[in-house]
Length: 211
Image (cartoon, rainbow, N blue to C red):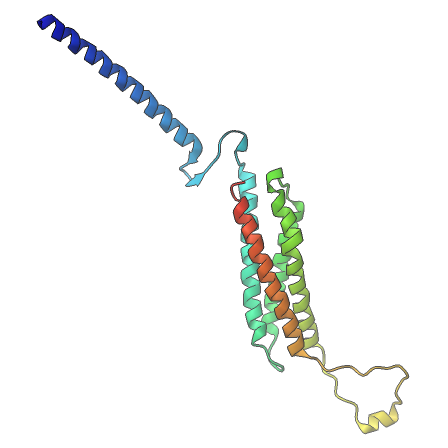
């Protein structure tokens, strides 16, 4: 009877040792798998194998996001400036904002035209030229028209003496007064279209951030 109990105890010990070994190996492989999938040094999830994203792809995506958000904020601030501008006001600050927007737009364009996009990133480039850039250019052109019109030298209407001394040339058209409210309304429409395009493009970037 004593021998049977001892035999059972030895079998249990062997089973426990075997089970512990299997558990330890499983835990070890689990740790190695987790560290292979996640980059804890940067806090970012990284895929392994053929779907792995290179640092170039990640940096390019982040640069595009930064440019899009930066331009969106700049145009929002510039639009707020022009909305409050009235005839006789100082357009100097708006012109500074406009020049910064043009500079940022050129940098964004350069990035999109000269970067090498992987196949899974092509949608980002395509949607930029189809959606984002046309709306951006439309706003820039509208803002440029306001600056040109607002800063054009005002012409005094001719006096009766001037009319008598300078006979009218056939086909000559008198310059029309600047309609700043109409120009601002046109720019506002371009701004609304830009905001819509901007939000749509950000959705594209969000959907493609994991590819």
